[in-house]
Length: 277
Image (cartoon, rainbow, N blue to C red):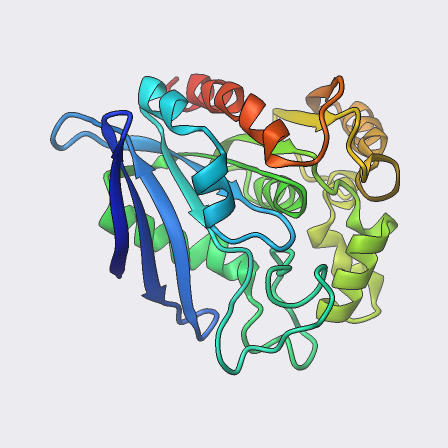
């Protein structure tokens, strides 16, 4: 693991790191904020998964989470959204290829070799975080924005024993039913829709996946609300499954980091309450 930068903030340290990933076959970059803490103490971990076109840098530079993480003693980890670099396939569209990994393990050529973001986020990077940082890997929460909200919900639903808390901002809740998701899932996984279901939060819930509760914030002025996000589908799935969903439509907010940064501190506090029990 190579440290690319380190900056003190709110008493803690914000670092950016790079390592050679065996899972993706590429170098991967991620950021970690570690609050000030007593020597030897282990802190809970909150994962933040970013959206289409993003890298680790978007939330790191614009998320405004460090004050809340410092207050509540929570490490925040922000991975990249896809493999990148020479030899990694790409697509001209913003919603497919590099920057648009959709947190799946691709099975279709030419994506299957490198686009294994599910395994990277669920297995490889957590092992590295646990080994290299003062992280209590028995206390993990996960959140994310847009495509990353989809990632947070699906990863949380597939791994309820690992994540004590799951939230999302403007998530793509049912990618099988919206254009962004249909394009990505067909391209990475093929046309068999049964293979899509593990990567669709609504489908996972319909198929029996359960977590105790979810927190979701979406802006009422989000330009993707009706076509791509469809929060009402998650609401119906949770109601039918008996999952306690707090879903807030925040008046006047759009899809941007102006929205995310406004409420990310609130999500950090919500996760901390559950991670510190």
